Image 1 (cartoon, rainbow, N blue to C red):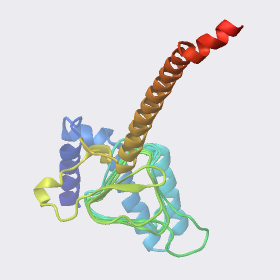
Image 2: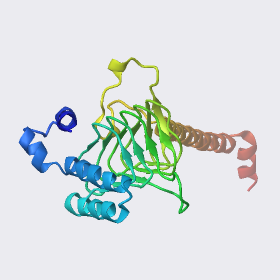
Image 3: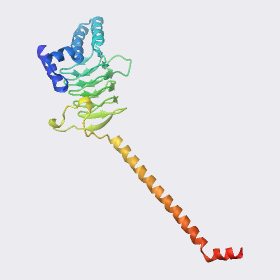
Image 4: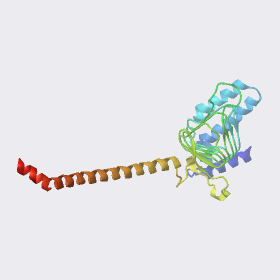
Length: 243
């Protein structure tokens, strides 16, 4: 138990630059408190002391703002940063070395019994406010961007953003050194192909508008030149003489 606690404290130092001392982590990190209250409630749940397990879970929610159902499965070195508003459902499964930020929901999409919450692989990062819904799998090393809503499986090492969630970066096959931890599941210089395509369409629309405006101006000039030419022709002079 103490070995695992040391690992989890080391994980917090690794992923949160605001951590200054072990005592601070032990006393001031609600994510760590929520995990250990979950461990107690989960053990009670496994002993079929369901009401008592839920009571401990409710106490943990009251103390930390993090709601973890005692029936959930959570691996080692899972870090819940800030944590307020995190909800982890009964059949959710979280692999080792995952990171969840505040406002994350691992929720279900049905009232039926059985597996109805998501499964997170190893090393998954879920940004603040993200919603992962249903019995889907988020692959190892995947990143879910802030406020994304994910309702379909996500492959290993992929990055998902938006509503509904869409893959903007699939980095499977990269060397391990290139796959660094990304706070809030955001990395620099990450292009969204949908946003890029929309920007290109807007730019093309501006180009077309400029071309149409140039053609309109040229047409007006030609009409003016034609009117002047007709006014100066011999036939026009004869008509004016007759009048």
